[in-house]
Amino acid sequence: EVQLVESGGGLVQAGGSLRLSCAASGFTFDDYAIGWFRQAPGKEREGVSCISSSDGSTYYADSVKGRFTISNDNAKNTVYLQMNSLKPEDTAVYYCAAAYTPGLWVPEGCDYWGQGTQVTVSS
Image (cartoon, rainbow, N blue to C red; front, side):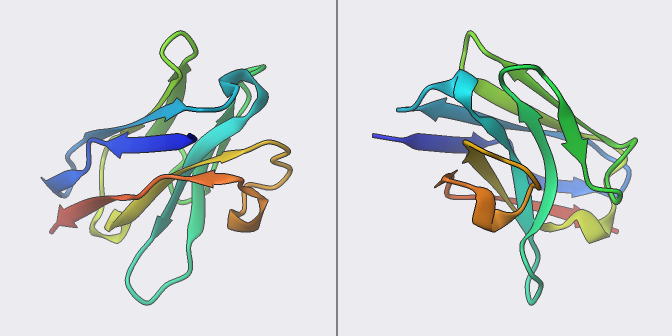
């Protein structure tokens, strides 16, 4: 059974930090790009960041560059998203996703999804 299990969301004040984790199981971790999307109320789901498990290459949305850092631990089949200098506009449900042939980091390119974790940044 394929699973992507997110953790680490919560409530934080603007300027604070959170670290999200995504534990993957049920598929060959090294064959996939794994990363994060987010969706705020009334908005489309947007790609935040992803990392290739095979070569470590990364992608960041312009809105998070310089503030968020993605990393992985292949031994633990886990991907992390360190979020610093959080802003109220980062408030959203954050979803972990995995793509076998990522190309662009877009929702329709992903094969597996986690259940989502809420991140709320207060002003």
